Image 1 (cartoon, rainbow, N blue to C red):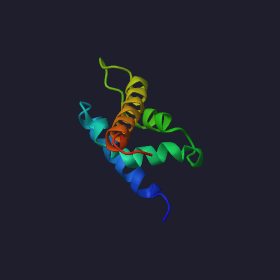
Image 2 (image 1 turned 180 degrees about the vertical axis):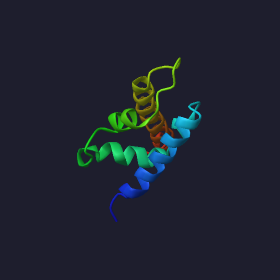
Image 3 (image 1 turned 180 degrees about the horizontal axis):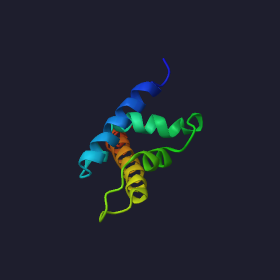
Image 4 (image 1 turned 90 degrees about the vertical axis):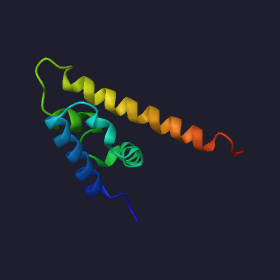
Amino acid sequence: MGFDYSRFEYELNNIIEGYNLNPKYEFMKLDKCMLFKALLKGIERKEPLGKYIESNITYHPGEIPYSTYASAFVSYALEQIEKDFFDHYKDLKL
């Protein structure tokens, strides 16, 4: 079974829609595993994930520019994935 891009796009678009209505914390809701898979398979996407997010969210005047949010979102997700990975596997002898 391959990566479900339609599900990923659906979830991502829900987050973008939620962000456009209420920007506070909406980006943090995307499932980390799905994001990680999308980043790993980024070569199959027509544009990088950060660029996709940046080009699809609404700018809120007086707030941090959306490109900063997109970059911060991807960075945050990768940090969380790394933390979860090491927390889960730190006691295993590989």
